Image 1 (spheres, rainbow, N blue to C red):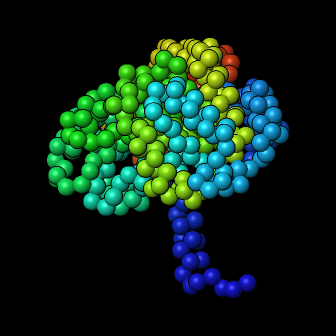
Image 2 (image 1 turned 90 degrees about the horizontal axis):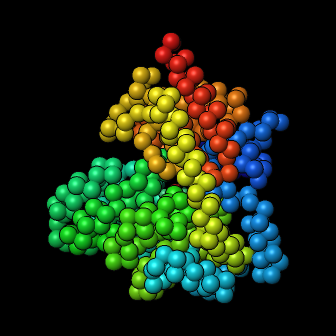
Image 3 (image 1 turned 30 degrees about the vertical axis):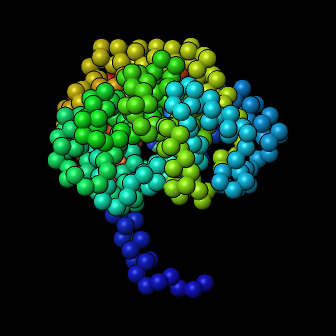
Amino acid sequence: MPEPPKGWVERLAAQATERAASQRRRRIEALVHRSDGHVQRAGRWLLDCSSNDYLGLARDPRQAEALAVAARAHGAGSGAAHAVSGHHPEHERLQAELAEWLQRPAVLLCSSGWSAALGALGGLLQRGDHCLQDRLNHACLLDGARLAGARLARYRHADAAHAAECLAELPEVGLRLLVSDGVFSMDGDVAPLAPLAAAARAHDAWLMVDEAHALGVMGPQGQGSAAAAGLGANDVAVLMGTFGKAFGAWGAFIAGSHELVEHLQHAARPWLFSTALPAAWATLCRSALARISGEPALRGALQQRIEAFRLRAEELGLCRPALSHGEVVTASTLGLLPSATPIQPLLLGSEARALAWEAALAETGFLVKAIRPPTVPEGQSRLRIALSATQPLTDLLRLLERLARLRDAEGCA
Ligand SMILES: *Cc1c(COP(=O)(O)O)cnc(C)c1O
């Protein structure tokens, strides 16, 4: 074995020591999931309250069967990029069905949310352009703007007035793109999309919305947060969605005008130079779309759980106000952030407390993951409780009782 370049070993070791000291080490565990929403750990079955499978489709036997049938018909892999020979009629059908559902002229399938974000931002933004983003946007949006070489500025979280102010102050040179998550992945709150769209319109910017956590969850037929806010193609020029969350699958897309999609087919490098999503996966996503748009009971079951969870949490005094910027959470200010989505973050403050509560919940039969910096700001470590249509309501209420007992124990400490 050749020696690694001098310095790399030392750097990696120093960073590992630092992670361990600040309780930020992540252990990746292999988990077996059951279709009823439980995961196996050390011989025990825990209720999974940590994944983004909001409608239970990821392990739904009918979905697995749809994938198996499609794989027998179309094969396992796509063999090439869309732009070469990997594009299949099933991709075309999925794109057309998504376009109709979202009421957008065109859709471009991508291999993942990350590649959709890097492709769209990299394909649109040029050096000297301005990209204005919510400071809590998903990492792929922030990195996409940075990699594109655009001037990136971040406005205060979910603050459309601040976004408008920032837009007003931008110099005339360069084009402007305003970008926001629809539902924020670690906070569970919804972006103020209508005022953001108004700000974009007033200041000659395009608006891009990442619907990763809102698709299948919000909107009249599950089309997401922009649809829920009554915003159409004229308000949101670039709509991004992923299939890894409520769709229970894998992959992503960008929806917009024919001109936008045609442009990205020539300028989105992660799309151009990456293997197409397998055709069988497109069939699977079509099946998920048919169920999301055709079975409102799925969304109804999720909504019922969100409402019952919030109601009981209020009764137990577990809710707290929204975070202020840079706030450090303590034992007396811990609690659930305001959220009407399946993402219910329980703010705990320190990494140590988040890890201790995670372990205590696992002992009671719940898999809930601690989220620590750098995913969230310093002093704002939390448990990210994710609700799903398939979780038994009684178990969710039991989870809240357990949280209240943990909170009471903190008070005595
Ligand atoms: C998960 C997520 C992504 C990335 O999507 P993948 O398909 O998992 O790569 C992008 N944006 C947001 C807001 C997400 O939560």
